[in-house]
Length: 563
Image 1: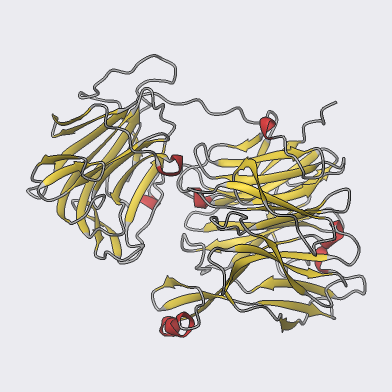
Image 2 (image 1 turned 60 degrees about the vertical axis):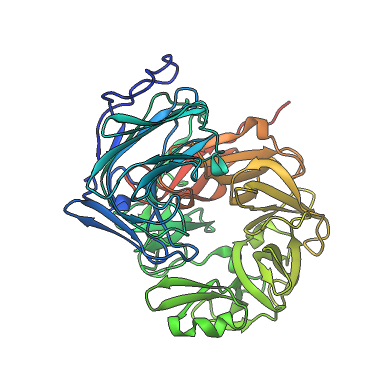
């Protein structure tokens, strides 16, 4: 089982660490190769993709990458707060069976500024994709490989002997500013086979964590070992009860919903939670003025037998693998209506332009909009699109009829725009906050509609880095944007707009959480509710060092407006 070995060698700000670090070290964390990394404590992010396999053997963790197809790889990583000026060390005991490509088997060190991958070929060692090469036989048994880097320098030892001096050569930029220690197959193009007896690392100096919002109170909504709890929703009943529903998946997947979902409720403003027994309370946002219930959605990922893959590919519809024998396709949207309080529902397919993919993200609480207005943001690709963009399902007659409208696309035509948060400001304008992806994106884009969602201004990039977002109009008229922060230090953050979403006070970014671990895809999707004037409950999903992805929340006070 992976275990905690010791504290870091040197605290941040304690001065220069000994260099080169070629002797005994007090390792911060060690993975011993006798448990699957995603089940170990601490948790290592990553899992096999494509035609790869990771299995525990008597010798250690064996990673077999049998394919050079796109997406076939298997890398495990642990984020760290290494100070590039003082550097860090990654060490592993590895036996190589085979490897035919750069980054196919070995260890990696990234410090947020630069990165280096030590590739183990059967007959040589390589760093920086062949820039530095050292002949060496890696297949004659286990060897201990140590990679150390700081500033612009890296060094490599094998079995205690210095074999590569990369002084001045630690210069490859860190992809998307990543900062972590990693091992395994990091290249789709590679086919490789190697056994990892142990992997351990230590930062020789750590960057300080940012200052978290004072007085913020974290609460646990749902957490269970073996369950990947994700993608929470949140709404408030007429009596003030908060209801949260969320996925309870048995696989760490954003597509495979095996395991279903669950719901919890709170009667004290989010401080304590209990399971919802029996039918889930109806979201009041679905209630129409005439007493009927209505909701519009995209279908999302729809599972079908794998033999139907070609049927959808021939129609140029997005298809992905779910699990063995099952694929999922992404198409269509619908409206559901109930005239008997939710006992029965009538579903009607919405007429849409020809599209390659379509996903729902955010349904706006109808009670917070102008009377009769209902808005649902969706995103995807029409058949003529090169990139994903954001669209709107819009009803101006309380859900009786729906229109499909364009919302936002990248004006430069280079970025995918997708998950979009919506809210109405105090002036009656609709504000949208749109997600983009690193490495080219990562900053939220925004646009505003002055005609209740019919037309939208060109989307523009904000200074807010994070995704995806949620928007809330506060009782004092300001607007709150909360969002996942999926780079080191991972967590949940928020900013406030004093002018209805036109500008955002990024200089006073509010840090709700900064203790996320594992993969950036395993946290976020916050939703905020103002439980009383000036006090907010924000729900999200989160992964910390124990590797159990769970539903959590933070109760916090909104900073007073500037005078």
